[in-house]
Image 1 (tube, helix red, strand yellow):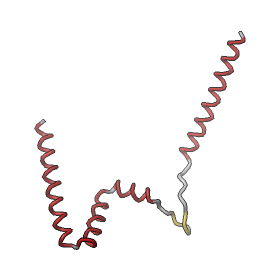
Image 2 (spheres, helix red, strand yellow):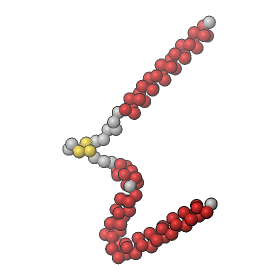
Image 3 (tube, one colour):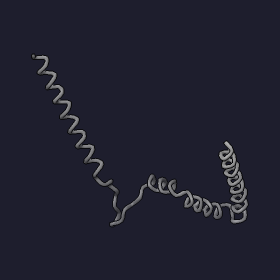
Image 4 (cartoon, one colour):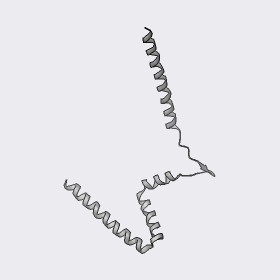
Length: 102
């Protein structure tokens, strides 16, 4: 009988801890993320910028083209982009053709 009582107490303690951790998890998921504010504006972190660029590949491409034009010059940038674009386009077309046949 004593063993049965300690087993019930242990089970009750485990259930209480599970309920407390569930409550803490729900509270953490409901709370808005804290973003540091600078003069009333929100400031994005470097990770936020990298994440937004990764989610918008065309913006990243445009940014790379602008930086390339500034660093290498417009003529060199256009030739590099042309070669890379044609290569990528041909590769994509080949992958699609192979995927259709398989």
